[in-house]
Every structure is written in C-alpha cells, then in structure tokens.
Length: 518
Image (tube, rainbow, N blue to C red; front, side):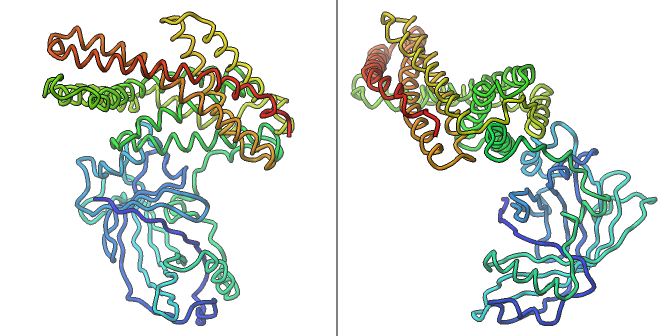
C-alpha cells in the first residue's frame, strides 16, 4: 500500500557544510548520521513529459527508504511524495498505482528508464532541545548516466555502455518537524559559508542537462485586469482536472462527479468569458469539454439514480414491497455505474482526451486574449455577472410561464444550466479583485447556487420518474409495481416542492445590487 507525505526542501551547491549549523534559531543539537549508498533509476516518457512538470518517478535501492517514489510538485519548494515497496513493480516495470497517478501527464506515452544515479549520502539531523528532528541536511555525492537502452536489471543498471558518467556534489535541506521559517534561517547560515542555491530543481534535471520545461506561461495582463483574473481561475481548474484524472482511474469515491463538475466549470468559464478570448479556440475547447462531461456523466447518472431510488425505499412499508427490491435496485445501478466507469476510463486513455488536455495546457499557458482583456477586472466582472444574471432569470421566467408538463420540465432544465453557469462564473473569478467586489461575487454565487440546487432537485425527479416507468415495465419489476408507484409519487411531490420555491428564488436571483461595479 502506498504511503504519502509532503516534503519541503531546498538544494545547494558548494564545497562543504559549515561547522556551526546550530547557529540557526531553535537548533540545539547537530547529529551526524551514517553514510549510505543509494542506487536509483528514474523513469519518464521518451520526451520527458513528467520532468516538464517537475514530476519525478524513480526506483531506488539502498538506504532507509528503498522503494518506488513518485514526487508531485505542490509549489516552488514543496512536493507530495508517494512511496511503494520495491516489490510493487508491475509487469511493465512501473507499479500500476503510480502509473495511474501520472497517466494524465504521460498521455499514452510509455514510461521507461531515462537515467541511472548512484549516490553516496551523508545525513545530518538538526534537533531542538527536546530531541525532535527539525530538519535534515544531506550531502550527496552523485555519479549519473543517461539511460540509452533497455530497462534496468535487478540492480537497477539501465545505462547504455556508451553513456558518459557525470558527477557532482549537492546539499539538500529538508524540513522534518521544524517551522517553515527554519528554511530561511538555514539559508542564511549556508550562504554565509559559501554555499549557493542550486539552479537545478532535481537530480534528474541536472543529469539530463536541464529541465525541459515548456515555454514559461505568458502573463495574461497586469494584476487586477480581466485577463489576469480569468486566466488565474482557468489555470487552477486545469490543474484540478489533471489531479482528478488519477482519482477517476483509481475508482475513488465521488471522483467521477468531481471531475465532471471541474470539466463543466472549465466550460462555463470559457463560455461566460468568451469575449476575452479568440472564439475559435474557445469553441473548440468548449466542444471537447462537453464531450468529456458527457463521457463522465453516464457513470454519474447511474450513481445518482441508485442513491435516489434506494434511499426513498424506506418510505414504502416493508410488507408492501418485495424483500429483494432493495438489493435488486442496488445491484442494477452498481452494475450500471461499473460499466459506465470502465467506458469513461477507456475514454481517458484515448487520443481525443489526450488532445483535449494538450489544448487545455496550451490555452492556459498562453491564452489567446483579445484587447478587452486589459480592462479593469471589477468593472468587467460586474458586467459579466449582470449578463449571466439576465440570462438566468430570462430562462427561469420563460419556464415559470409554461404549462406544467414535459415542455416546462425542459425549460426548467435550461434555466438550471444557466444558473449553474452563473454560479461557476462568480465562484471562479472572485479572487484577484478587491474585497468588496469579491464579497458581492460571493453573495451572487451563493444565491445562484441555491437556485441551481433546487432546479437540480426538480430535474433529478424528472429523470427518476422516467426511470421508474422503465422499471415498472420490466418483467422483474412487475411484482413491485406498488412500491415503484410510491417512489414515483414521492418524486412527483419532490418536483412540486422544488417548483413552489422557485418564485422566491427568482426574486432573490434577480436583485440588481449584487452585480453593480464595486
């Protein structure tokens, strides 16, 4: 089973550590540890797609933490490390659990050895007056080769015979139980002794001659501009989508729902702010995100129906429903979810999804902004929220005027989509603006969320009643006709309750003061 922890470290180059490391505040004792010999093979795609994102994947023997290690960046200095034992290797070398975590970054390319490092390590532990380890400083003398042929053998030797070795010495300072401020204090001690911050983000980047990072993300305009605020929201959601990819592949609870919501948020953001961007690019991305949402939606729909119908079975007296009905419904929708989930994961392995991720990356890194993206964000966002508000209330008014029945249900569903987009637009662009504007956006988002939830309950009842009609026609369900009829009536009542709340929610959603410029 994998273990996970967050490491926060800094790297240095220099001749040697200073003698008086206890000059740093809080350090009461300096403990020299035993020397270790480490042997590590690093894995990546042939074009180093993981390294481009500061991700490293290795198999290391020797030392106290031998095993497979995957390091995923969290910020400039912190990384999340996922570790597995050496015996966790899969049939293709890399453990399946780790391969799933990087699938959204590898995008169909195989993972193989790219570098072989042998490290002679000396560790120094800095402790406080209670003996607690505050930080660890390692002196690593490294000999490395670029892998030029097949996979490593049992000893981890994947370097080709013609690969020239390179060597260097580096120092790593990693926090243990010490405060973040200790890093800055130790930085002063080390630089005073002649050490300098290493320009290399990782050993792997050093041996390969530099981190093959893509072109630095373009500045989307001055701080506080519409382009800057919207692009920040866009980049955050793209990052979230990539993280959720692994959760879906691993079958984590609620992961399909969260990834689907993130895809919808991205699509809403692009559509609500389409005036800021080249529309040809946003339309292509919007179409791709719609496809992704539908791919994930089939599994989510089975999940929702199963929860909705099984939960409401308690309303039917036990003597009036078959003893096997609960189990039959649970199994039906669990089976439907599993089939749809497998279909979704298959889609995540496909060329269309990989192309969508490539385009999202390119768009987020260098958004095709139009001139109006330089406008002040407060005025722009106020105007955008007013437009989303008008769009939502117009659709809701049209639905409320319609006669009860399928046409009204469809109109309410369209109003739900508008309310959802208005909510997401406000939630994803309330950072980067002044507090007063952010507060108004937050209030607007909360009211649209309430409207969205009630309209969602109405739509769930519509879908559930359609499903119950199908179940009643199934030969296996005829013996439970009464119970299914009770469930149908409860769903009809749920729709009526939701509809009764809409006039008041419409009044609140239409308040003009929520979207005035701050």
